[in-house]
Image (tube, rainbow over all chains, first blue to last red; front, side, top):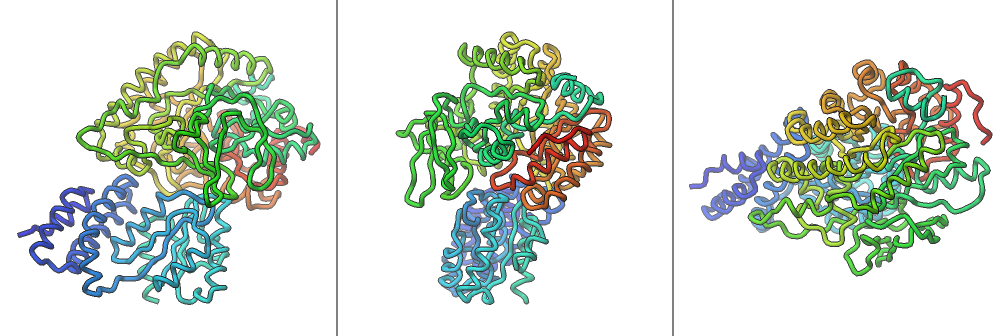
Length: 211
Length: 423
């Protein structure tokens, strides 16, 4: 019988091998995939986020935990799709046009996935129309924009305008983040939320989908 | 005082006759080529395309006429090869996507991909996979990650040591010649050392190597500092050994004509936190920093310069204990990095080379008056009892309005009580 607490602990400690092994064992025993997500994966990632916010964990630990979580989720996801399980929200995320930086964006994407969201990661250097298309194609309700450079921050505003022009602005909540981005800037460009770390992004996303 | 005397006074925590100023002496205290061009125009200097001496960040060479116009006190000495592994020689014209005509080294060889992005190649070798990408319409390159699949059982630290080796005769001759020239102007001399950056994330992907092996992916490297510490120690200990051998040869070649040496650009801070705990820093990095600084302080008169972006307050006592004399860029916009706190807590033991103006908001997006106000405030805080060399917080980025850069320079001169040069 799979010891599911080991799945939780493996994600928490960034042990990909154990996370995958326990998940395989559990699924072979017909464990409920949704239960694996809600009772073990999400709480593990919530604890990872908590530790990151109080500076017990740092970027390396987050990356390791995210990798372990993804290993497990890769096995679980097809079963969730099969059963028509609804995610907490559908997030389109990307680093904006002209910007190639992705570590922060990847961390936010991982934390959101670990938090039960479906994440459509468009990568880096993403043009506004790609965000628009992804929102339409995947019926997203959250858009996350990342920028690390002062010269690419304006692409955030351009992207929000593109969402408006395409008639999908009201369908989504837009969250922004990245080192030079501030709450003031988020307000100035009409974003719905700003977070200065990956864990805050999850809290914000949960709050925004509830509104 | 001469510029050298002024800078040395500041480095020795004595008040100089006026604040020493650096722009362009290192790859982290520079100016984007477009802004150098704009400054040359504003100061009415000879019209000629600007050389890009640091192609990764597209930093423009600040030549002597511009240094005179701006009132700069430090000359930089750089290694023989750029971050893409080719030398700065045989300059040729190149045009940025926005139309700016510049000069680049002959081995700056690029192609455009289907998106219109510019790809650059290690050592200028177009047959090797590209190692840098500048997005279409962009202003500098990011490294292209070339990570071979990792076989945990076969990981070999030697693969991450390929780039570390003894300085060649050509390297030493280059440094000696450049230091002689840099010293002749009366300015202070800052030397950019190679091989002493431990786990600098700009260098881990090895954009200068044609086919790097080992751990070269940025995220994988960060995870390695957590999950493969012995591997990191193996790299750092061997790297340290090589570095000390090189420092010895370098000192024999250039002597004490060098005033400061830029040792390491590894970033330990983020905007709101850090990349690791103090305990991890002390375990993984501190021993090697201590050895390198120890050798330098025992055998030379050089001051040692540590660059780290982000919130690094928690590491500063360790930086000081490891022997670093200078901190850069002094990112006051990051958490717990307020100028007043830094000066009062560490100003008697650490020189702040940077911190003069915020480059995330004020310099690029503020008004000239806001720039002036912040410069005056930072100069007032940091300059007491020396220990401050004015620089912006990291390189001046592309698209920074030239009016704001001029406002910054004028404010420095205002603080120094001198009449600003005509601009």
